[in-house]
Image (cartoon, rainbow, N blue to C red; front, side):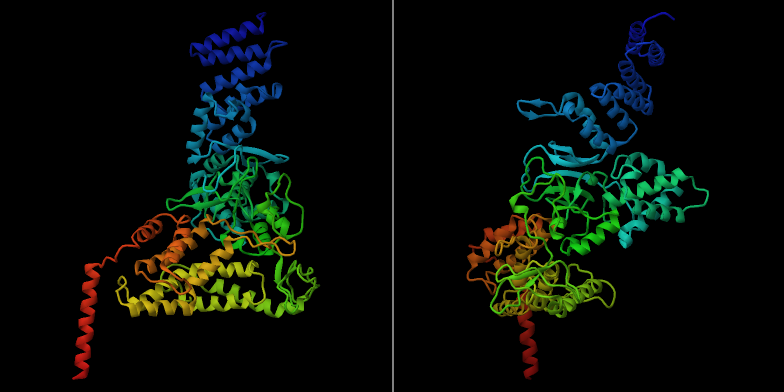
Length: 626
């Protein structure tokens, strides 16, 4: 009874080393009862004992008590991380390591931060639990506001650098984008609870944004709780209702369309992101750098459908509020609304632009400037002065042109589903690619007559032109040469070139991708109205691959498309696009470019088909003559 704390602690440590963890537990607990004991050290030791006994929850609580008494105790933090991993709270463990243990994990060696040896095993265990096949070693969490953290890099990043690759955690097969996906996600977790799997999801999603109820906007929380309550039985416990509501908010925050990626929420959303997120063919989420990023700059991705990035600030804000229950506060939206930049954000010179607004051509005769409206309405005030001549325009002069174009774009999006092939699949009322192309040409000509080249409606038309140009090109190809590979008939090649020029397929696809990826110069001191997309953006890569594919067809035939002056110019244009292409297109077109100076190799099978077709045509002609 009269033994000192030191004696009891020493006895406990001796028992621990012998593997008698229960005995050690009793000794450490007895030592805590002694007045004046070193409680922090004892709680730290209790944390290790509980881990050995397979009681990670008790270990976490013991370490928390230690950290209350000694906030910088590195061993207690290390054991807290171990406890979180043993409880399969992998997201929470990664966040805890990054926020609370960063200095211990990454000591400076020769001026560089390197992962400490004793932390390496925990990091690997965490990555495995999160299904991360790649994780950039220089990523860190940084606090930008009270208890609001985001990812940064401690080193400068180059375009194309892969930051993270994560396997899909789960998928909501009944997902619908209605109400920002809210009702579909509520239904998903109601079903999970019925199947008895709610505890597993709560365990493995712990630590995702938003981490707690008070981090969800009040209006959004009330809305989710109502949907969860309405879909549950009357006797459902309140704790279960709140758990389903929080899981719904967490799923909806970090999902990519219908799939949940738990680490996606580490990145902040931006309508002008500096990183790109791509769902690969194996359903992994890959995040890579789009443009040079300075160390310490927040790393951002886009959580909205790509088409939303082409929209005006009103559409983007509506989609963000539906999904997150709050307004978007990214740099682009702040610029568009004329507000200050987000807290902690210092833009690079190449990131600064004038805000999308609604930029239209100046009405003054001979003036090539543009005026901007906050929004274009049927009735309203006047625009900002033209940067070139100082004139203004009112809404009534723009609305008659603007509203029909906006209505046409909206109707077009609802009437078709874009995909490869000469005809677009779907219901009987869906458009063929030829019909879609004709409508897009009309909308392009309507918009270019009065809008700024980077107005959000025109940017959407550019994107749709790129998507439709590929099946349109294939349609004209098949019309000229049949379903088989190209037959070597100069007349067919000329007809093909004329048809493409008539429809402006190649030229418009090229100008569209250039308009989306090139920053326009400032006018009269006013920055461009919209940020360009990085050429490496995955959707832009599709456009580059389409154009490279087009040019490869002409190079294969040693033909020069209309609008080009020589074969060498075609080679230069195709080569410039290839660095943004990957896979089969890059390999095929590069092979054509490498052999463009060699004589064409005639495929025996194609030549045999050609001879048979000529023979058949001659027989038909002779028969007709007789």
